[in-house]
Length: 476
Image 1 (tube, rainbow, N blue to C red):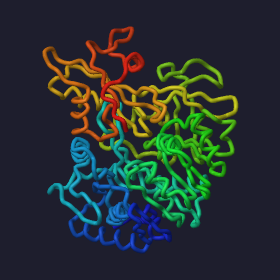
Image 2: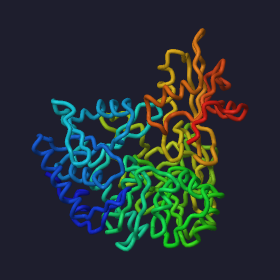
Image 3: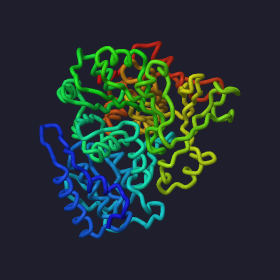
Image 4: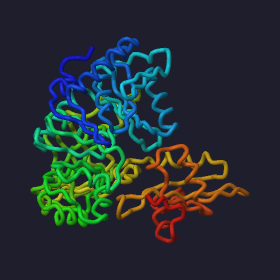
């Protein structure tokens, strides 16, 4: 049975509605009924306490009922996109040992034996898989009470009301999309889920929207498609990548009444650790603002962590301490331990504290690429490319892009006597990984770029991109 004080209380007390593409609208009562039915099915199938359950998601109201059904049955929800690549699906199944997958209120059995009991999952609500620097996804374990506390802190910051219409084109597999959905239910707002982002499709939701949650790449595309009619829009929630001065100016010009909350955070910390609030938009431009409620931070003075000197404006790794963060990485205590320093999570981002008190990100220690707000591990892409029979070596990296923030480029060295075009290699990737992970451009080269030590050098990918017309451009 669900434990008292869990996220289940959100649905117990919800009074709003959830709409989805196609016009269907679902009341809180309908969600409660669907969640209760699913919980009963899982209990009848023998779900053990704190057992992981895969939740297949397609940005529909039924997805939210699935989360609550798993929680009511005492399980731990593992978000997985309904259209996830087979490699991603197989990895998550292997890592969790999940016996059950739920989708649209149905329960599918994936395996017979139950996974081992995991004390780590006591009180856990979610296992969210994120890209790791090694290329192997990491299962971030998030607790009911901590995530519920984060929602309370976000409500103090954002003040959603039952009169709000919240438009959400973000996928529920990501913590950003999930907390927006849960907070909308918690506050009684009307939530509109957008299944697949297109500028025209999103614009159709905006005439009476009051809150829009999105990422900068979507906003760049949206504002690049002409005027945006959203006369009632009062709040834009964005994050996952830098907003940029030009985009911030375009929003201010077209939607002067819409305050932008530019958010920074990680899945591991419970999301939204910093916010550049609308009141600070002008003076704080170019920064991630100041900490959100309950957050402490440090700028590391450890030279190995990217520090560049001493003093209040010195750059170093941004470290975050939060009561809302993860329990740990699933079944990986060593990785969990190395992710922290004296109780502060190591973000991998290099930051500095500006004289105005705002924090500014100036670089990254970790190699994760942020493509349109989606985090991609270059090592994962290299592994997929090197599995092609014609590929001897591969190196991937992010390249600055005006629309996506970063585009994903890869350099490939072919085996002697073998041949493969960039388009063929991209098609190979597309058959094995999610679409957003497929390189935007692949450069077939005689040798990978190397640095001063002679090792493969990711920054050299940018030089390849600047020196040549990219081949195999995705055109997305």
